[in-house]
Every structure is written in structure tokens, then in C-alpha cells.
Image (cartoon, rainbow, N blue to C red; front, side):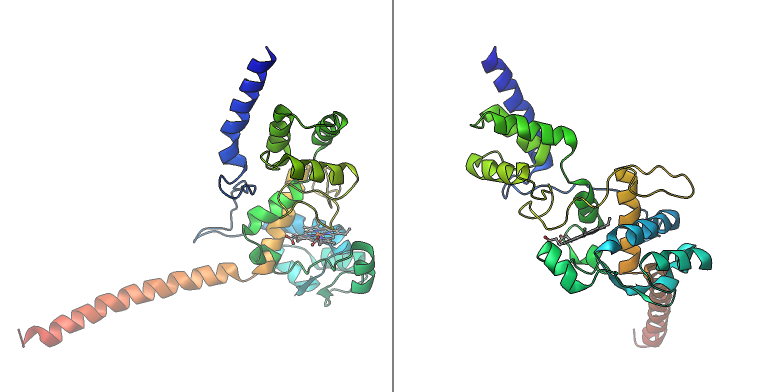
Length: 275
Ligand code: HEC
């Protein structure tokens, strides 16, 4: 019976491997999300970005700066002057200031061992773009996953079945049990583990969870929603003029198309006598 159960678990987990982990490198595969602003005609979901600005200021800017953006630029997302002033005050800034964190870099380095990176361009700076930032924010172990880890560690040795369960929950490669054990020990010891951060351990504790931020319009504040919103905001912050770029590109292509037809007509006319 146990053998059948194990066999079944192995089959289920094996079927999941290509989805969760890259077959060759064993690194986790980022789940692909759909964003309104990607693609050639995409534009930002301004409502999401506006909510995301609130999450960024109230939570992320406790540690991170977004220094390439000024508070006043948030007006482009539909925030009123009063809303902008209020958000700036959260970080002790005024509306014409850049969005720098109230925490200074030395204090941050003392607390975390690293300076939290500026988030202005983070969406473009990481492989996987917004899908990565989203995966990172939602990639901390849930309570149920922590229970699984504790259960597995309580047994001493990691069985094949346990390893596969851990692999499908936390995306740690089951082939190397020694490494898995070392990681689970660090995780149980309280280190910050994330399924999608390269190497899994990072200096940032899970920054948001369900309910971390209250939206004035009563929008659902689940972890997924908060993450989507702040990721949309950070994508906007990395390129606030994307929509103009795309529409200019559209006109340029149209112009080149018309020019090509004209040049062809002229060419035919000029060469008509020669042929
Ligand atoms: C308590 C402080 C703190 C808060 C709050 C915080 N972060 Fe971080 N964050 C850090 C630190 C420290 C790092 C550096 C992690 C490392 O390199 O180990 C980091 C790194 C990051 C990275 C880069 C990860 C990488 O691949 O290098 C992203 C993206 C990020 N944070 C996003 C956010 C977002 C979005 C929020 C708000 C929802 C947020 N952080 C809130 C401390 C914080």
C-alpha cells in the first residue's frame, strides 16, 4: 500500500516538475501573469497603479526609495493634490520631493546587512520583469507550507515522498536532499525564504500579507491583489511615459508605410521612360 502511495506521489510530482522547475537548471519557473500594460497596444491599469502607489508609500518605502519619481507625478495616476500631499507626509516629505524613503541607508544597512535597492527601475532590472516582482511578493511560504516543512524536519531524514512534496510546495529541487535539508533548517531557524529569489534566502522579510493596507474604495486587499497593484505601480514608475512611446511608435510606423508607398510610386515614374 505504501509503495503504491509513494509511486502515485512520485508520478504526481513528476508531472508537476516541468511546470514548477526548469528541467535542466532546476530553477523555479515564474508563473506568467497577464498585465494590461504589456504588448504593443497595452496601457497601464491606472486604478491598480493608484492603489499600488498607496501600498508602495505605506509599506515598501519604509525601507526602499523610488527616487526617480516625485510625489507630484502621482497625479498622472489620478491622485488628487490632497491625496498626493497625504502620501508624501507618510514619509515626511512634501509633494515636490522625490519619493525617497525615510529610512536612511546606513540604518538600513545596519538592520538588513544590505541596502534595500531603489525600486524605480526594479521592474526592468530583473529577469522576468513584472512577473518576477509579483512572484517575489507572493513567493514567501504560507502557513500551511511552514507546517509541511516542520512536519518533514521533525522526522530527521527526508524520504523520497517528503522531498517531492517539499519540491512541489516550495520549488526546492528534490534531487539534492542534502541541499534541501540545509535550506529547510535555515527556514525553520527563521531566515527569510522565498520560492523565487535566486538561492531562496534574502534580507527582505515578507513585506505584505492580506490586509496590510486598507484601500479607501474598499477594494479587496488580499495578498494577490495588493501584490498586483504594487507591481503595476512599479511598472509605471519604471516607465511613466510608456503610453506616449507606444503611440508615437504607431505614428512613426504609419508614416514610414505611407512614405514607402510614395517612394515606390516615384521610383516607377522616374524609371518609366528608361524601361
Ligand atoms: C523591512 C524592510 C523592507 C520592506 C518594508 C520592503 N522591502 Fe523590499 N527589500 C528589502 C531588502 C533588505 C532587500 C534586499 C534583499 C536582498 O538582496 O537580500 C529588498 C529587496 C527587494 C527587491 C529586489 C529583489 C531582488 O531580486 O534583488 C524587490 C523587488 C523588493 N524588495 C520589493 C519590495 C516591495 C514591492 C515592497 C513593498 C510591498 C518591499 N520590497 C518592502 C527590504 C524591504
